[in-house]
Image (tube, rainbow, N blue to C red; front, top):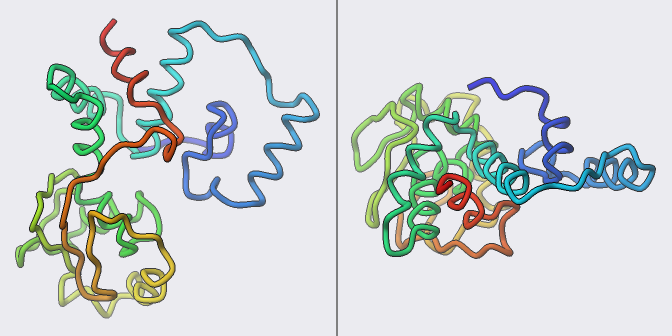
Length: 200
C-alpha cells in the first residue's frame, strides 16, 4: 500500500507514527516548527479528533482503509472491543516479524512475509495478515537465511525492546507466549476513539 510523504503525514497527525519519524532529529524539527507557528493548530470537532486517531492507528500498522475497517467491525460488538482490536492488529504475522526484530520496519516485515521468507510452525507462508495464536512459532526460511535482508538480524534483536508476550531466540525464531494488552499511554493512538468513530 502506497502511503505518501511520511514526514508530512506525521506532522499533520501530530504523532511519530512511522519508524523514520521516531528519531530525535524529527522530534527536534517538529518542535521547532510548532514553536515557530509552522504547524497549524486548528480547533477540532469530536469527529475530527476521532478521525485523526483512526488515521494514526491505521497508518501505524500500514493498513488500507477497507482492511482496517474490517478489523474494527469484527471486534466492535465483543465484550472488550478495544483489547480485541489491539490483539487483532498486534498478532498479525508482519507485526510480529517487526516487533521481534526480524525486520527493521513494518513495511519491510510485510514484504518479508509476502515473499515467503517467513515460516510459521514449520510451514512457509506468504500472508502478512495471518493471525497468530499462543504457541505459534515464527522463523526465517532456511533458504532465505543467507540473504542480505537478514545480515543484521541478531544485532537488531539484541537492541530492540521485545514485548513480554513474545519470546525471541536471536537469529532463530520467535514464539508467541501470551496476548498483547492495550495500554493507551504506551501508544500514539487512542483505540477507544477509533471505535467511537466507526460506531457513528
